Image 1 (cartoon, rainbow, N blue to C red):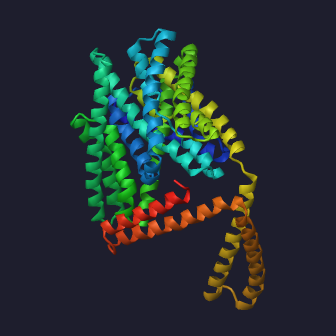
Image 2: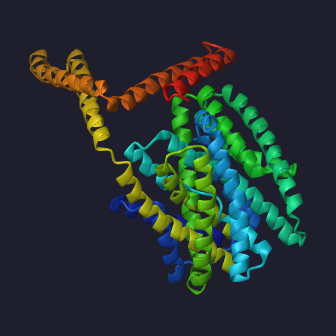
Image 3: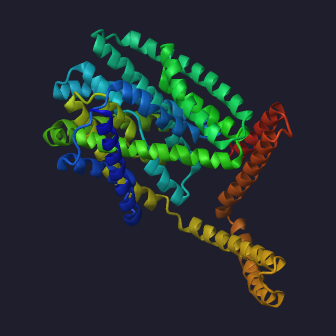
Length: 497
């Protein structure tokens, strides 16, 4: 494909993605599901020809920004507080899924074991974006959201490493699981070391610059350079990208960037991930649409194997760490498959069966699991008492804000005092009624969670103030770290941890 044709093809993909986004905006249809359906439609209709992607292009160009953006938005304190269950789910999820799915497909379908294991590693990464969006709209437990998000970040990196090792073995014809396991730990540890070193270097550079465009350019360089440097030293590039993203997201973004730069940074990377997600889903639909219809039996077996493998990991791990039964069900069914497996499948475009199975599992995951989980979560997490508390709180906050704005309007001369005084009487009455209702609620047991939220809000405000003071050079990094540790201890005590 010539350069001109490539540019035209890219523009066509972006036009389709933008069209889907516009339709979704007006219909409220889940965007990831709409992308899947759009990809199938484009493939079946033949609007665009097949656009094969090389493995090197997928690993080097597509995966780094996806992983970097996810790590950039992960709170490392939340990750640290829940590291044991998260790491158990992520690592066991990759290992058990790879082995269980691999041996199941080999036995049930006769697919060569090495290829079945490769598929097991490929399909292991989870993508809870749509689930987390539903959680936010329902005020679901923050720890549950942290577990799903943290598991996704860790198992993305681990699964890609396992996939790369198995693919290398498959291409060389030398399959040795013992050496593969040893290589896994070596390249992961090496990737973490490189990612932390490069991330810290970028953090120090960012601290000396106050220009949002240069700072964002540095994060782009970091996302790709951490991958390339790691690969040069034969350690995991994807793990390095995750480590570097965590450093910038939790230190560089806080201590080295102004508030306006942070906003631009988050928006920029959100757009990049949006575009990559859109293009990848459409491409897999173009490249595998016919094979999905002919490989429905293999896809069905793969769906069953993936589902059972998920259950084998989630229920024992969540039981060991004593999580509620409801959380177990949500984490089990919330292990949706998304863009990472699809991107890896694109790197194996020559194997039509594996690509079709991957896309089939992803379609089932996003459409069936995604829709049913949203209905389940909305029913189970819908709390009438909590909604009543939030309603009273919202009325109180709204009334207080209205009074503040009215006072500002009087001071600026936009509203004359006689008119403001008449309105102020009604607002003061509403504030007093809401205050009494809040006092009544807080005396009941149901108000405990609200008190915890307010305490957490106050402590988060303290953390923000300390970080801002450090960014302005008012206090040193050593003092800031000491104060932040003390505040983190207070936060953990809120929930009795």
